[in-house]
Image (cartoon, rainbow, N blue to C red; front, side):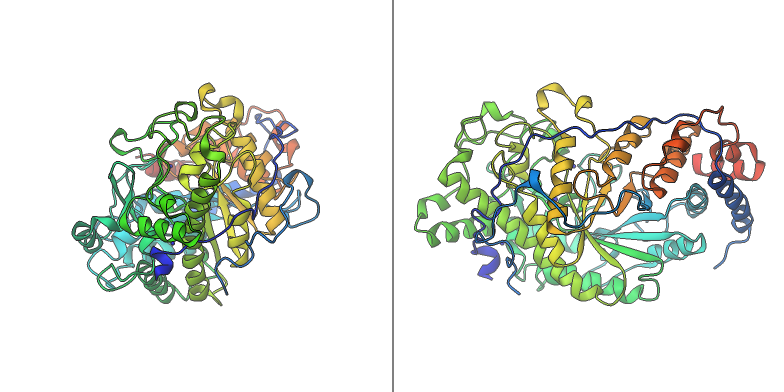
Length: 556
């Protein structure tokens, strides 16, 4: 904390495709409370299965890319949706848990395997479906182009299989470090960084000329700038190598491939980088279109419509990273964001991002077709300044979403075209918890995305944006998981496995949450029964000596 002259000089005209009026976000109805409960039969079974698993710990086993988005389509009225695709309210929502960012070491080995084994055992006992891990480009292809080291991940896959869990694997083509929640540093592969040092234009650049090395600019997607290969070829070769190495596990153990398509793996521009204090919440961020490849594309787009002077630069009055919308001429309430020029620029900026995602997902679909593993892609939950007319922070990130236009429907349609699950964040956030001057509405944003994916008939999965262990966050996720308004969730991935998660109170909340999600988020009896909780799973883990040893391994 989601463009060949096709890359460097193409312009995707999305004008008027998805303009529609959006109603103000309504708060979700209903209240769910976390209370201490007596153990249900399911909880007892979970506890017993964990105790049985202890024995195993001591005895381990070895078309046109823009087709479907044209302005000839009728605008969608998001407040008037009917029918469409949605998860049923009583459907089970499987829960996955993210593993640490440094699950695999810089040397390509599984990090702290004994602790990992204990963590997986405990998570299996809690009833989670599986775990998620980042497969870092900067680790796997570290030793040179087309030289892949999957050994640390292979050890993890076998361990996950041994515990009867499933695995989501993220194709992480971005660097780790410099964003919210990044606890370690994993840069891009050294040979790729060498190419960047020779040609700094390969990475995103802001108006001041500041380069961002966390992801290769989409402006050179189809140019052979990485040791003779295009970025799309590099990503495709990487995914193909993964498929070939793990073909015996795809669809059975590895059930989902989340395809990285931008900074933090999200379909977006790096408009709000936290490194070196460049950006601070709730700043509006800055447009990232000033590398030479993006500038060439902008110039070609302007010339194509006879407005050559529009292609010389991005908006001149759009402010700086840390500013607020009203501090700028472009984003303020009556600013130029609503002008003819702004519509041209924002269509081009967001259209290039959409086509970038389309290219990578098209490649991924071809590579993983027939493996029975699902594909997903992630979109960022940029909830600050959502209540303003211009939605400034979303615009700089590449989402052309304003008071008068829906920016998420074309993304949902693009993903749906490829059968890709739309993964969205900030599912745990409430409007009332947000900083007052941020004009934030995560609930309104989630509601809009749920309705857009429903209209596009695209599956929706969710994550929490920040590490949260409290009952209030879990309650909010349970609400947003249902299909009361728009799509319900087909899966949820919890952020993240660490020592704090295994503390008694936090662990108890996780068990309640997983159990309720397995029953469609509507098991209010489980959540409302009163009890001292002395016989719950987390207490069983502490009271039983063998399981106490397991938890102690995790907490070391």
